[in-house]
Image (cartoon, rainbow, N blue to C red):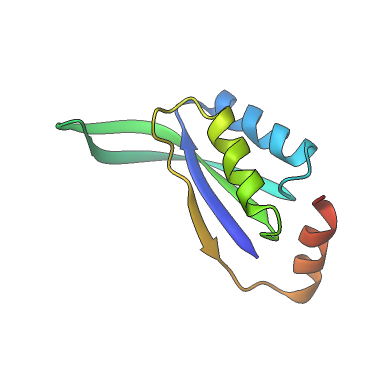
Length: 100
């Protein structure tokens, strides 16, 4: 299974993108978590409250998912991290079955 991590400036933005990606069958599931991010951006040290979006995918639509996520994202340079994960057989089958 593929986990895709990205973050948004508001819960509403994260929820909107999560719903679109699930409805378009590019991911099977999405989880949203609040977090604090500390990072350097254009010479400035930033500390922001963000909403982390964790997407669960089979990976079969990885390129399409990445392109769609970039198109929907409001950040100039969105974090898009792909992590391969081992999951139970039944859960993997469900994820696979929920995607186009």
